[in-house]
Length: 163
Image (cartoon, rainbow, N blue to C red; front, side):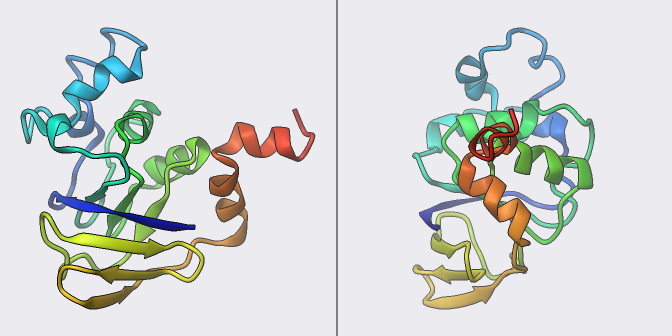
C-alpha cells in the first residue's frame, strides 16, 4: 500500500479530546458532520486544510485519553490516509486498526508542516518528497496489516467468513 499526501503536524500528547472535543462528540453520530470539528480546540478550522489522502503527524503519545472510537473514526472520515507519530496510546492504536486507519511509528522530527510524503506501508519506508529524505518506520505486523488491507476488523472477519 502506497500512501501520498501533505503533512499536518501536531506535537506530543495529542489526546482524543483534542481530536474531537468532549463538547462535540455527543452531538451526533454523523461522522461527516463532526469532521468540521476535527482538532478545533488546538487548530480551529483545521478541517478546511485537509485534502483526501493527507497525513496527520504527531510526536509522542498520540491518541492518549478516552477509549472511544470517535477519534480515529473521525480522522479517517475526514480523509486522512494515516497518522505518523513517535508513539501511540495503546487503546487508540487498537481502535485505529479496528477501523482500518493506518498508524505509523517513526521519528517525526524531520517532518514539517506542509511537507509532502510518500509512505510505503509494506516496507515501512517514508519518503519526504519536499526535503528529499528517507525515514524508516517500525513495520506493522502481518495480522494488523491484513486488517488494514481489508478496511478494518469487521471487513477482515467478513472476508475470512467469520461473520
